[in-house]
Image (cartoon, rainbow, N blue to C red; front, side):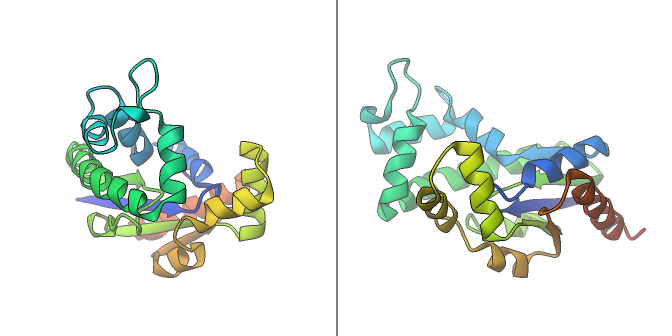
Length: 196
């Protein structure tokens, strides 16, 4: 029997480490960001609709979509953000379901940063939230992206509150500690899902 396990969390909350452990344990992971990237490429499904709705002003010289420019627009404009989400979420969901359909049984993990925001929880049998307190999220984000605290907080607050995600999830992995501590939590959660 196939079971789909969603992995979500906030920006810089440690999802990559959790996914690294899951891969290391031999389970398949479908990465929603990768599906999104693929569809933003020239002639991808998202590419075509974004070009149609937002225009050629959002193209780079090589013909690719200027995702930084588009990101800046939607970050500061809620109606543009709603429009972009209404374009991208159905396409990503359709592509995600195609990827999931390739597996017949066992646990299939899907990394979906905006799982609740995009209302993708309906395609998951169980959901894991990778949690980190805002203080550490800010520190990691500042170090990773070389941004100041104000901008880091803006990016964090542009997503659904992590405490809310934590309360909605079936399992929570706290990624504050070392990679080995995270690894032990991941193993424990997987054993729990499998009923070991």
